[in-house]
Length: 105
Image (tube, rainbow, N blue to C red; front, top):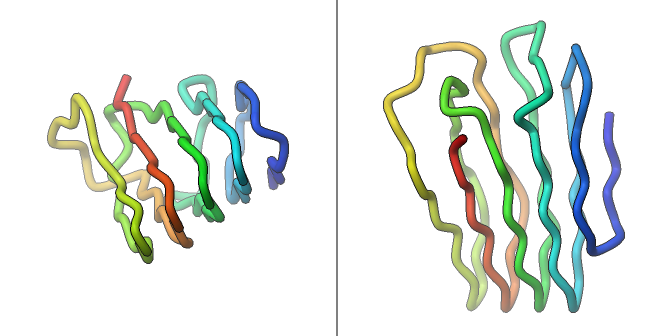
C-alpha cells in the first residue's frame, strides 16, 4: 500500500500493487505507475484532491474503472486505448476544486 500526501512527483515501483491512497491539497502532484505490476488482478487508487492538480501516469494495458465524486472539479483521460480485461484499476475518491489527468503510457 502506498500513502502519498506531499504534493510532488513519485514513481511507484512495486511488483504487487494493491492500493495507493493519494491526497493532495493546494498543490500539484505527478504519480507514475508505469513501473508497477498488479499480481492479484485488481488494485485501487483512492484520491483525495482539493484545490490541486494531479497527474496519474497509468500503463495502457490496465483496465481503469473511474468512480470519482467531482465537486467543481474534473477528471480527464489522455491517450486511452482499449485495454485487456485484467488487471483492473479502480480509481475512487473525491475531487474538489481541482483536476486529475489520467495519462496512459
